[in-house]
Image (cartoon, rainbow, N blue to C red; front, top):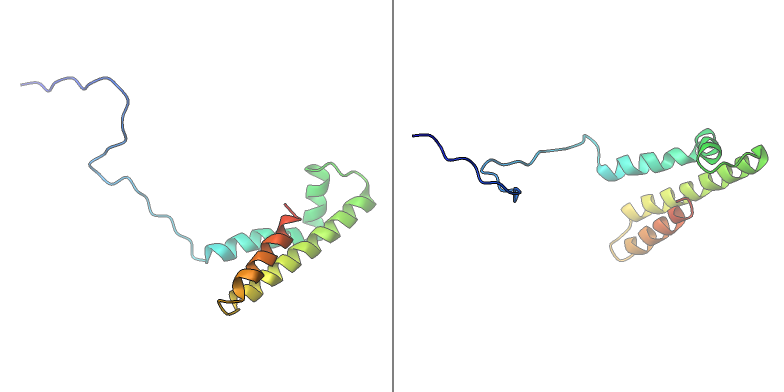
Length: 106
């Protein structure tokens, strides 16, 4: 006896087999994110993005912007490192300072 033709319509996503996949990293995800943020501390990287993304053509201005971006990122990174080692009643304030400092970069 042949099987009936499947019904027409949209799938509701139900599947009898698990469709999840496992993704993992060898490092702490926060460390990976902060490593990519700290990339902005590099004078050459910051100048590259200032020129190619933000179209700052004046070399002196581009250098000054890159220098300031590096300082903000270092400050945010130091606040984050301090918060990760702080006691629970102090850490939230340091995390806030870290996010506030990083906000100037983004």
